[in-house]
Image (cartoon, rainbow, N blue to C red):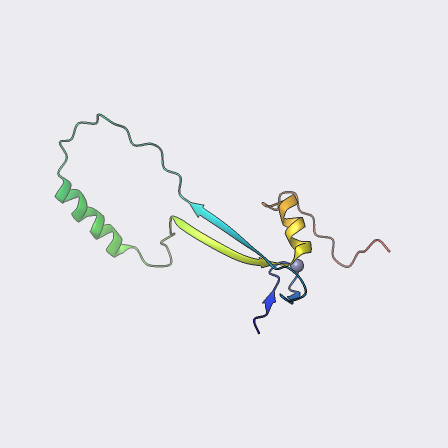
Length: 100
Ligand SMILES: [Zn+2]
């Protein structure tokens, strides 16, 4: 049987007894619109050659992919708190304190 673990509270989710949720966060580089009407007198072959050379030099760790998809499993409780604050802004974690 497939078991899921909530990525926020690390609790195991039993898919038979409760709904398990999947969050996908997609981050893509936002490019400015390409300017039209630019004079096209550049040497394209030369540019491609330069580009390829630059890619050769870059090591894999320094290379940041422009498009990243992160996937998380969440239980219903964490889904609610995620929806309240998806970017985790102003999150203050108070550990070991409960209101009982
Ligand atoms: Zn959870």
